[in-house]
Length: 486
Image 1: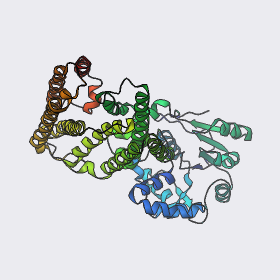
Image 2: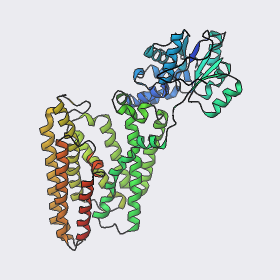
Image 3: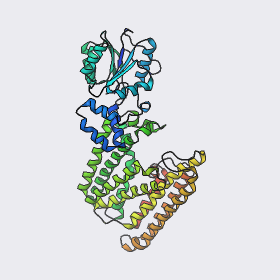
Image 4: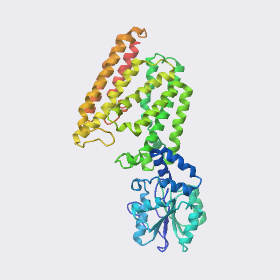
């Protein structure tokens, strides 16, 4: 068996007079161009994507219709580099290599032009879907003396059986067994690791669930943390919100696919790199979001409505508002504040105007801190505008003033709350200890802004705080002051 590498590919041990026929989807490309095309259309023009489904029963017509709405950027797609290298080697040895795919002819042409490796490219023509037996009939007519075939799926079994040699790409064990029983020589086996749980955890951004602990704030501020039923409700709310958050992250990655593939680091994201199939994302993301909404309304109608607001706001942010300077920071502050509001809603306790006002100002300050670090970095590098953000390097005085101002305003709100609401409420035996909280939070905000101004704040401040020893120490001190006051 031949197992070529990208660095030193070896030629196929077969008669050079036999042409090598290469499939596209799942073979030369790690993904599926039909899903790529449909996914891109969904985010560009949802109405056109929906209307295109009317012709889905006629696969060739469906592919032609989708191709008419625009093709993916082929150069940015995740190619199977081992097969590209193998094809290049076979061409250099004098073997004819042809791309024959069930994808539409326009897709086949675009893919072939990307690397310039093929003697010809043939795809479906809008009438005939060039797959399975139809592809086999085409190849027998075109290459009556035989051919070698590179494919990946059960639909390729008739072609593997008829070929004089096979190149197997990520085939299932059952498909490999059928090829062996057919007696077709396996010339090369190219395979990638299956998607692990770790890959899915990265795609779902499970580490971002840490932000959802804000949902537990009303549990303590509302003094119901000793009620097991309330604690259980808050825990369920946390899980439902986390489901929503992960679903929106999946959608965001799918909508940003083209940009991520051109980015130096984001191109390694699971969907952009091909580590996860787009079809899975397009199915799982809506299911997660719909499931979280149903569960949210079952827990509490007001909690469900806040989830809808969260979904609408985060979608608007992903599609447009993240490119609007200042508005983007306000939206981020609102998204964090919604988490706090969801905590009260799922517990079915009254919303606190003091708490929500503080949260909006405080988290707007943290959002400004993250943006300020990016602006300062651009200012020092003299790179001008920050791509996709709407800020310039010389905006740093503005982000500094607005951000620090919002932080100070949040502390003023907390002090007014302590003096006018918390202390007279009777909930606290030693309410004077509560005044340690704004002092400790002021120290933490100063640290965050110092790091941001030095461009040393590389993570979201909330995520940073959960991994930073000094932040955790200050957080523990806040907790001690709160419980001593009680």
